[in-house]
Amino acid sequence: MKILFISDVYFPRVNGVSTSIQTFRHELRQLGHTVHLIAPEYPQKTADDTELVRIPARGVPMDPEDRFMSYRCVMEQLARLQNEHYDLIHVQTPFVAHYLGIKLAKLLNIPCIETYHTFFEEYLHHYIPLVPKQLMRQVAKRFSRHQGNSLHGMVVPSRPMLQVLKDYGITTPTEVIPTGIEPASFVPGNRASFREKYDIAQDRQVLLFVGRVAFEKNIGFLLGAVSEVRKTLPNILFVIAGEGPALKSLELDVRQMGLIDNVKFIGYLDRNTELNSCYRAADIFIFASRTETQGLVLLEAMAQGTAVVSTAELGTLDVLREGAGVWIAQETLQDFSDKIIKMLADSKTREALGRSGKEYAHDWSATRQAERMLTFYKTICKTSA
Image (tube, rainbow, N blue to C red; front, side):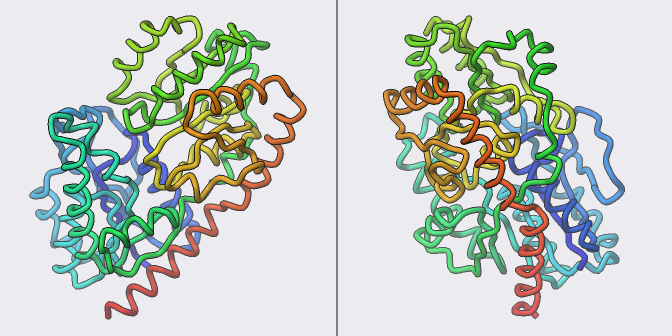
């Protein structure tokens, strides 16, 4: 097949959507298919492959990491896109990319599907705080329903997210297909060298969060849990790997909570050189996001044999299995911090949990998910003919 991906975000912008696009592109191409990608230009220079087209883009108000692609610049390439003879368009984000996908699908006479990566009902109010939260939720629901029902098909990463979309009134054919784990995620990282590079004592107990440093990730709750853990383990260190719009606010929280000696912000890490070692350098990966449609970082941590303490909400409820690499905690400071303390105190249990998590992560093969995606593509093409 020949597929056109369109997305409002891609590397060097680091997030789960970029990772998902990269993973599916790689696996689909390995299976012998052609996958072109239209994505925004960023101020940073990138070394792109020949099947990736960068589109001029401008900044997004209140979210400087993201970009608005030029709709006009894409439409100026219509003749070239017509000559590619694509079988299907796969949109990855609901902004300019969505409307481009719908328009191009009509002009090229091919179906358009979209992956629902982001739970906007619990997302938008963080970025438009002056509008009441309940009103933003209603706007997000109507927005998602309207967009979803304009497509030939939708992909969601988890069953709970599928139920949310059904409750919105989306009737478009939908398939649950999570992003899989690449074999590279299982290559053992170097715990000792990572700790040395970031000036972390080899015997210090370390908690880790990896991901976009954004309000919807509930990192403030994790800081509260760390504050509780510190009462028992004064030398505990919480490493936050990532960047995002909540960074300055969280840095202020750390100072106000007196956690300067217990929290280290280390920014984005290169997936190909440092991320595995970062996961492996931690004693426990901690996570409490309420808005994940999947929670890929949980599986990446497990792939490195790192035990996890996490809440299970929405997409993570579909990913996590108690005892399979994780202790599932309630979103209360007492329960969450108690589980961290107990796990840190029992190295044998922690190591056994890490081994079970690594075995569990192997079930989430990227190749298998790409094969399922191809089956869905073919079904949509057949029913849309």
